[in-house]
Amino acid sequence: MDKQTKNKLGSKLEKITAESAKQEASKKTVNAIAEMLARKGIDPSEIGRVNKVSVYQQVTKDEAGDFMVHDLQAIQFSPKWEEGPEWPVIQQGPKIQLQKSKTKVSRPKGWEEAVIVPDIQIGFYKKDNESTELEPIHDEKAISVALQLIEDINPNQVVMVGDNLDFAEFGKYLTAAPFKQLVQAAIDRATMLCAQIRSAAPNAKISWIAGNHEARMARYIQTNAEAAFGITRGKLSSQLREKWPVLSVPYLCRMDEYGIDYISGYPESYVALNENLMVIHGNKVTSNGSTTTKYLNDAHVSVIYGHIHRTEYAYRTRLSKNGPRTVMAASPGCLCRIDGAVPSTKSGADEFGRPMLMGAENWQQGMAVVQYQPPGVGSEWFNYEPMWIYNGRGFFRGKEYASK
Image (cartoon, rainbow, N blue to C red; front, side, top):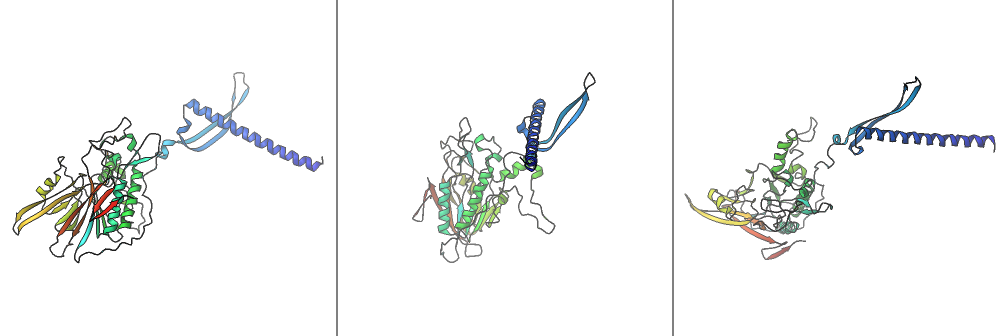
């Protein structure tokens, strides 16, 4: 073997030896740090981020006066809890590309139509502790029927009467484990719904009236994290102030992007179709099925309301200076499940907190279409047409609608 070959071989052996020694030293350091954490009673799973590792030697004397060299290690880290919660922070729903509608419709001159969409209660629960599969408490079949009707009517207005998000975790009652940490899933589905309604009614004015369930988010933040209430995205001096706080229903569901008006201020929020008819979420409930009576006792104009999840409507005629005056009060029903999936004071749950699905509530699914004369046209009449929905089916003006 010539001298040059020997030198190359020697260089490689030195490099291998050095790398081996480096790996051995690294392994020794890791083992020493692990032993140090164990002595201190620190669980490695509690370490969020390692900021700095120091390896150094210390010289001491023993009892005989001989010098001793000690290999020492130090680790600087941040605890895992300092990085924030393991679950993701609530984000805006997904961006959705809208499809163009081809529906054409003709109406009598001077008349418009509005589709009334009642309580949807969008939300989910986990079917079991082992699975990631989510079960909706809103009724996808009823929503499908509603979207088909909206597309066929192609209305001037779509009015959502509120409680379209359930927000069980933000409620004042104890939240069962299967319903926890699912706000983001509900926000994503509500965002999709906004896009679906805009796609079905591309030219309509769409209004989402805040109900008591939407109001839960702001109340929860004020109660548990007041410093975060009303916070908007950061802005430069040249930018206008944000319209909505980042932790608000209209911002998270991208309503401005889909041209949807969010009517806040429950219980005072409303949409007036004309001077004789207004749509509200409502805050009155009578368990024996006569909530309409409560509204008719107070009403000076006709009112369509939600909140009770039942289909009701009635009329009352009173004497006025212009002769007999008739007003109406009507509830279109709901588009949430009516089998006990929605948490309520009457719904039951098993030992894991999952709904029993025994249909404890006296609720009915449905929606409504209103023909009305807009303000400034004629005498501002209107006509109310309810549509009953059951098990993903409904009939309206002689046509059957079935969930897709």
